[in-house]
Image: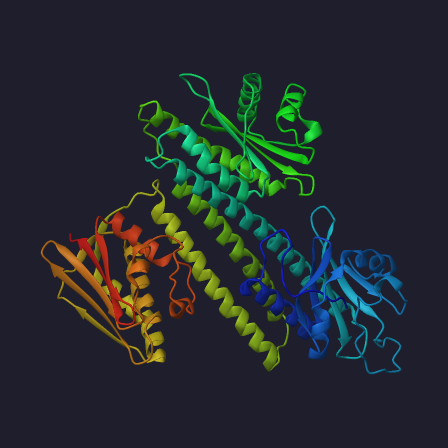
Length: 586
């Protein structure tokens, strides 16, 4: 069984060590050992040139060894000596493999005389591959609890677990790529915010401000930002990563303008080595970037709609990696976002007001929703698969605990999916609100019936005060139910034992006022400013101990807005909160 570092990440990438992903993989490894019949199991993945163990169950005395990374080179001799036992499974008999010395643990096994006895120097593992057939990980097991090699049923079960592990690992890789895209997208948004400030008086100011952020976010050694102008010569700034400016000849700019227009029409980027530059640009560019260390270049067009407004180029030295697909895709996205900002700056500079609204918020939300969907897909896939497998097996007490844990995890993640669907539904401009008379009294009663058991178990007093009928508002019953449910469940969630939650609904003039007050942990003034923003999470450590996605109050705000009402919050940290929703009555 291979050893590996418990941290998830590459030297040049964001470290992947979130407890949610690690917990899912650990649960799966423990399930493999328990249900297939092994005392030891480990899941390792290929990260760069290392084989890294992310999950391990077995004797604690071997854990320190397991936390040492192994070179990827150990995989090839391992596969060469192993015998196929299934689509993914491989079995290594008692055959010395010199390349594995110091990279594989042989766990002690009580010897038996049975012909199928499991021996200490035998290994059984599953090879995990991506769609191109490249090895991405190893799922290994050892020390059979029966003392024998697994039978056909156990091998079939292990094969199913290997398929689940393979999907989980591939999804984690996809998620890491998405996280990188979101990081680059955040840089793009920072560029847009900086470039769109009305205090910036010229395109030169915009280009100067964006240079540092571009170089930093892409780990580049220089940038070239050029903007075409409709009323005269274009504006360009070429700088090294140290801020040193490089002047370009007019003919170079003319050639780049032609190339940028072609790139914008084709919606593609140029990721080239120094020697691969087009003939019409190569000599001129090399002359002005006369640095023998410049090796990797990335160029994209900047534009909006069908109009190309400029060109952006970044370069790296020979001691740096070439541009990755994620970086190329991010640069193309920046070409769109930064192009829109530069068009606005160009219009302001020429004293022409351009009425356009950038889709920053929509892009921001779409990226985060995609990231969260990947975050959910991994545990839901693994847990659902485990639940299906466990449902076909007679469970002892310990396995039953695993089964119940997976069930709770599935329910929690499903709640997150529900919040995402609700937020998407109420935020969709193509989904108009169909108003019907809705009596809030039974809606409140239904919500209270769902949360009162939770409040009782926490020792929280839950009281309800409803004015006599009618308490009718025009709106959507489902949305109003979720609005009230989110406010009341949040109040119970963030109120400790001995606290109280009060729900009050009154008719005030031509409006119906819903107030949900609690004596819980409260909300700081700083957090109140972003409370109703999608995906917002408080900085309060006490609140962060409770699970949440930051979607519930965003949905509340959107629903209230759709019903032509208003929502207010009064709160002090440590003294509780009161959320007040005012809706027009029928």
